[in-house]
Amino acid sequence: MSSSSTSQPHNGAEDSPLLPSQSKALIDPTFGSSGVIAKEIGEELQRDQDDIVEQLPTGYGSTADLEENPIEEDSVPVADLDLDSSKVATIIFSLLLGAFLAALDTTIVTTLLTTIASKINAVSRMQWIATSYFLSCSAFQPLYGKLSDIFGRRSLLLFSNITFALGCLICGIANSLWCISLGRFITGIGAGGLTMMGTITLSDLVPLRKRGIYQGLANVAFGLGAASGGLLGSVFESWFNWQAAFLFQVPVALLSALIIYKNLNLPRGSAGFGMEGSKWELLKHVDFLGSSLLVTSLLSFMVLISFIGKEIAVNGGYFWILTALTVLPLFAFGYVELYVAETPIIPVRLLALRTVLSSSLLNWFMSMSVFSYLFYLPVFWSSVTRLTPTEIGLRTISNFAGVSMGSFFAGIYMRSTGKYMKLSLWSGLLTVAGTFAVYNTTRKSSEWFQYLVLLAPGFGYASLLTVTLLALIAAVPQDHQAATTSIQYAFRATGSTVGISAASFIFQYYLSASLNEKLYSIPGVPFDKNEIAQIIENALQSSEYTWNGAPVIFRNEIIDSYDFSTHRALLFSFICSAIAWVVGWGMKEHHLHTGMNRKD
Image (tube, rainbow, N blue to C red; front, top):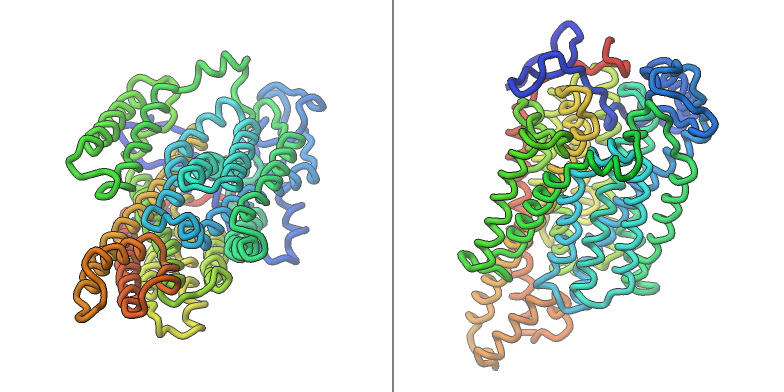
């Protein structure tokens, strides 16, 4: 289904009856190119500074302070703007710090999820801890792109950092499931902004295929944060308590906000400066109706799929209320964005493009797959093989090493060839094979296999993230730069939520069924049915009960039940990765230009 790249450069936009025929091509901000090895960093940084000056259109992407260099749009050539390299480096450091925090926070919770849930006796509802984060991230992340076009990148970055810090603070002082879930919900709002706004802001500073050093540094920051999350989480839990794993993130987020506040002063004419006018005038440009409809629909949908069959009965009153609050606002949102809103929060008409739709769905299914195994392989290691949080953290390092290397390799390949379709298909196939290997993890798997099993799917997934974002942006018009990035992140975030929720439902369903089948079928046990029912309930609430409280006669059956149910969740992960690979064939090959103006 893919098509080869055209022989002549073009504007990169796919034909669609919903798009103007003369729309300008869009410059990619995000995953343009790979990183470089450490010895190249200094030279590449200076070369990219020169390239920014030469290639940016007038007034685009400067970090000059407004008070020192007041300009009007299109009034001064880019070469005359003062691009202070130290200030640019400081800003980029803050953006990388935000990526580090977002990755760190996610893996801290992944590693400590079973521990936290067991400590507060909430294993059967531990999906709240994970899902509440992704609920808010999914619902609010799509809003950042257009809002940053209106209010500017600086304001949205400050909001993201402060909100992230507040959410971590609440988690750090909480001692109940609902307080932790509230903190995770607020953290999700901030973390979604950190990743989204970091990506968009880099587009104001760095051209597409001259961005090797910055993407490499972003890979290092994300990989370091993700790899550190499990280890730091286990260290804080062992030396202090699990709450400390959240509290230490608060001052780091506030430091990032301070750096942004003091250094990110984009001039008029920059894509990231925002619109002119007072705050009240800017508010008139916000699509409040569309934003409210989108958030309502996404939140209702996420709550529905997260708790259907448990807290929410199928065909019950809450089921139909949430279904209505999902479907009706979603259709209304589409109508408002297409026909009512002057400045749509999401350019939904772009989904009519083949590459945009295919790349978005690929991200959706692949995120479902990846986050399912990232949550339930540690559950298997903890509940079945009885690994400690530290041992689990060490085993997850391979995933994030793969993430860093995959993005690095994808950037190198696309920087050299200007193409991505073959890379997409092979990366998808590698991810499918990797998730199949994860599914085949057993109690007898060798130690080296445990340490390396996450390397291949992490590599493939990171490569696909890079490819699909470039493909999506190469297919759309220039005036949708930030909002198009929102589409990609929205599909990733919702896919993560759907994946974790679906995997949680599968895990809980099969765990309950297996425990009931196995424990009631053991002959000659000195327990009546009511006592066995209580043992089953205790086993559902906490995996630690298997070794601390469960009768020895039932221990093997409980372990077998956890083994069976976690592998059902991992099978779901494998199936999602296979669907994502098939969907990826729908993308088209677009020329990846070397300049910001896409003329070469």
